[in-house]
Image (cartoon, rainbow, N blue to C red):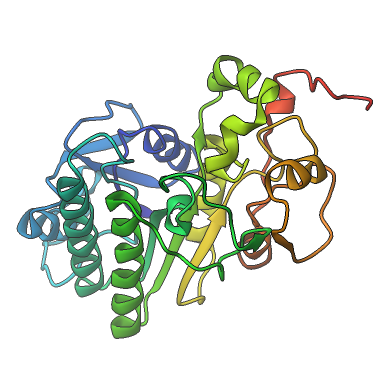
Length: 304
């Protein structure tokens, strides 16, 4: 596929865009900052400018100059859009700026992609939509495991922008019939961060309360993105994306007893099973995470 990838220079994108290229896709990174990866073309685009987004998606990709015949226009040379670009969390810009930037960029990308006839869009939503991550004080889920039916009631501008992006996406899907899939991505972890960050998490699981004790290895996020690009006919969908285990050494039952007393547990759960349900992504996308912090660090409770 020829993929228009927004935000390929960000924390998640600079792994996922090259991964898709390594799998044989032709990837253009639309970002204000170039990725400078040999297998990914860079295109400087301000996604908050609707004209720039439309022109970028309607234009000729860098690897298309040798295609015979005239450029007759009327559509896009891209087969799919992966939209990861955003101000990526709270505390990086004023809240109004975060909301305005993220919503405008999301609207512009969805409008241009669907008007130009692109039939597959995969976009980054967020775990924060559930209102737990950036809540003031402690916020517990209404039930566990947290699935895609859990209410989304965020308090912060970043998470509100992600909920708005989901609404925009549902609307453009209803208008066009394209496949538009959103990922409620949990805390993205790069391979080097296991050694840097996880010893503290294993020693003190309370550090992971705001992430529902979950995480997503960026390599598995690449795999989930590939599976979404390969899966057709689902219309509009949102998927939780996380690894299969938790980001702490405490067992699932220990976490439930210590942190979620009184919270409804809707089904029996495995010893180390994530509380951030990935059942839907497993079932509809065939997503099967391949990585774990246990591949890098010794589990301090091994054999217990």
